[in-house]
Image (tube, rainbow, N blue to C red; front, side):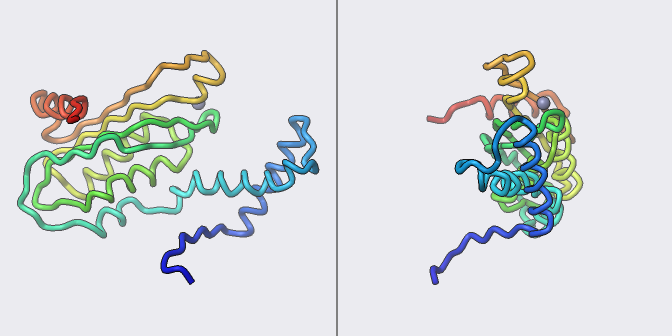
Length: 199
Ligand SMILES: [Zn+2]
């Protein structure tokens, strides 16, 4: 056996229920679910949907609490360009982009990999970009209790690009600030640092 296995587990009952509904949808749009290329599609689509919405069963607070460490560092910590993939709750189409997150520690720091995991927990649900921004902000603020926290999300929405207004190049930016980031100087320093390119 290999030393590492990435196990994917699906609840069989739910997967089967979602699979049969995808099967009906495929028939309704005029396709033949029996043709070769589509035979396993309802099952694959069901598993993809359950993967993309797994955030409902995850606890972002627990993820943060599991990796908080006492530390006297009290300058700004920035994690920028965190890849983000979510589903808009109005069309269930993807929106994707980047999150930039900063906090100013107040006695505790958090393992750096936990911040992107918190992003995933809230992104892997049916979302609107505004609420996603707020969910991440509030989770870090109430759990880590830093001196300040800032979240900026830039994302493109497939529901705008493929349908509706068909705007291919528009990017939606949302942001939220708590604590010291509510001060204009701190906020500007953060915004300058996330827009700067080091190389
Ligand atoms: Zn939408």
